[in-house]
Each structure stands twice: as structure tokens, then as C-alpha cells.
Length: 323
Image (cartoon, rainbow, N blue to C red; front, side, top):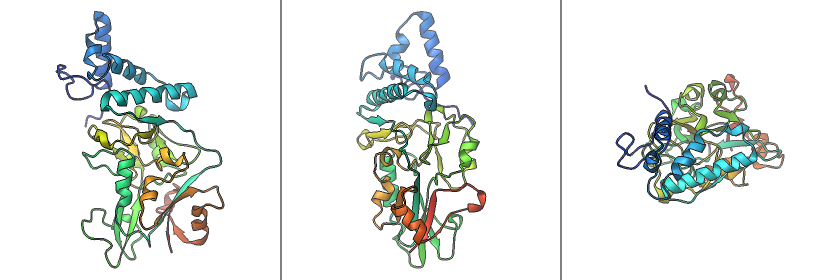
């Protein structure tokens, strides 16, 4: 299957080769070389969508192609790249976004706990996650999966995540699954380009621009935590969440992996992830594992907790508990 990353300049309808879609990297560079050799601005004009000045999108995209790996950038270089991405969002979507690059906070290690006795399967968390993280509406991409389980079951493999009926169902309980931000993440080891890594605050992130779409991380993850964009993600302009993070909910492209980031754009600014904030039953607990007075530390100390597949040695920072 052809998995080449499909990103580059958007073209107008007169460009028969790339009309209606993004040029891939090879085609982008081919066009650049052709234009340079011909001494012409035709390609630059062709890469504009007509909303703003001709050639601006091409110039910004060119700089994005040749930027350094995010982890090696200086603070100034990081600021420059987020400003380019903000401008590209304006050109392509006609919206003003604010992309942050907040660094990990000192003395913070994030963790999550899920109360299986309180969750009633309402899916408010899923809807909030989709909206907050600018997930593809066309394919109905969701970071969170809620499994309906019969009592006595302990793993979501035995549950149903595609239930379409009134909830809650008697004699059943509900278990949420998403990225568990493992302390020993197998997805990081599997990535051949180092496009995914664990931050000091425990959040496992993806630099979308360095992802080649090989999907090795999907195969490595035992927790259903990774998503792949088979098509160009579709988010209506009036539904785009404007406050974004470079490693979080900024707009992605076809052929890129993505995942839950504990809403890095929110958590690093002192807010709860969207799913935890939206939960109507209080089943979701998020906080700093290094803070002895945090709610999650109280849960771990005083509740009956367990983690999925601890025998794998992934050490997930996601616990399930009961009242």
C-alpha cells in the first residue's frame, strides 16, 4: 500500500496535476526545481489559493519542509515555525489560530485515573475530545473508545465499543481506553524516525512533520492508542479549535499519525483535558503524580486500582479504579 506522506502546497483549479489536493513532498520539490530552472514565478502563483498574496503559501511551506527536527530547535526557531503554521492556517482555512509551544512544567508528571463504577457510557468525553483536538469529521476519528463490559470482564478485548442504544445498561459497566502515556512506551521504540517521544512531564507526543506514516507505532501499541489519517482530515472552519499546540491539536495532514496528548494545549496551561472536564459523572481524574495533595494521588492511595496488561512492562500512567 502506498503510504507516502502527502503534504505540500495547495493548488488552484487550473493545476491539473495537483488540483483539489496537496502536492506530496517529491512533487513539491520537483515544482520548485522546475520553477527555479525556468526563472519563472508561474509555480509560485499556482501554489497560492488566491486568498492572500501570491507565493506566500509556497514560501511558508518551503521553510516548513526544511526546518530542523523540533527537539533540536532553539526557542527562537520554535517560535518561527509556529508563526508560519499560524499563517498557513489563515491561508488554507481562513481562520486565525494561536499555536503555542509551551514547554513541560517543572516537577510535573501527569497521570490519569478512570472510575469504572461511575462511567455510564454517555460519550460526552468522546465528543469533547473530537472538538478540542480538531479530529477528522469525515472518518469520525476518535482518540477515546468507550467499551461496554459485562461484570466480571477485565479487559476491553471482551467488550463492545460500538453500542448504539440507551445507556447505562443494567449489569454492565463502561471502560474508557485511550493513549496511556506509558513510562516505557513501546510506540517510541518502534518509530524509525524518532517522530514520537516522551516529554519530561510524561506526555507521549508526535511531531507530525517527521512522521512518515509507516504505522509501526500502531502495531507496537497494546492499548488502541494510535490513529492514522487515511485521508486529508476534514474540520469545518467554524468548528476548528483556535487555541492549539505544536505537539497537540494543530491541524494534521493525510498520512500522519496522531494520538491523545492529555490535551497538551490545556494541561500545560493548568486546565483539565477536555474529556475530564466534560465527564458528567466525575469518572475521570487527571493530575500531577508528583503532587502529594493532588486528587490522583488520593485515588492511587485510597482506592482499589489496577492497570491493563501490566505484564507487558509498559508502566502506563493510566489507572482504573472502583469506589
